[in-house]
Image 1: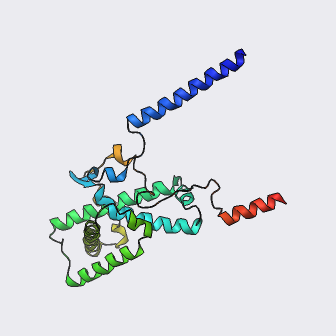
Image 2: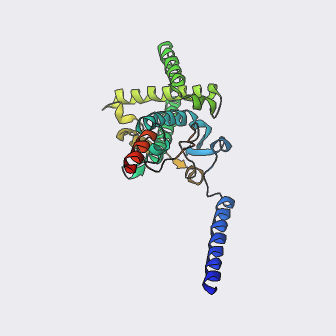
Image 3: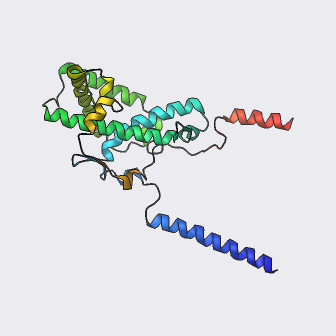
Length: 242
């Protein structure tokens, strides 16, 4: 009887502790943020100029579509499995999140330099290329992403325009200084040298709590046996039954 009361007491203490931790996490904002509730908040600043979470919309849509397509190949029944996959000492989700911020910083910084160099306009030919790029982007978008657009199409199209101007300036740097266009992409070495010359401050308080993968997508199922489709699991059960 004493032992039974002891275990009840331990169980009560554990429940109170778990509830207390959950309550504290909610109260001090430890949980993931809602992207749509922070559209006007600064995600990163470049030389004191804010880049808001809304300014990342194009990059989020692009990267979520790209990774989700890969996820459908990996496991069409449970695409969340691919997002949770751990590879190269990190999770796919975290790697994609780094790509979003990396591309956004790259384009905003080079666009800023393009403006300072009076190169923030496009020729008639470049405008035509931009229209094709925008059309391709919207045509590639998944149906669910159309339902969960974080902002107006016009805003996202302007972000694509800014990215095009940044790329134009990137190509100018490569042509004038070498060695290649790739060296000035968001993960290029020569671009990293340019970036180091500027004051880049990430709003880690919010960025660390931002979760990529569910902003413009829906993942209702999580499979705990990575890589197995429903058909695979059915076959596995049948084999075990025999």
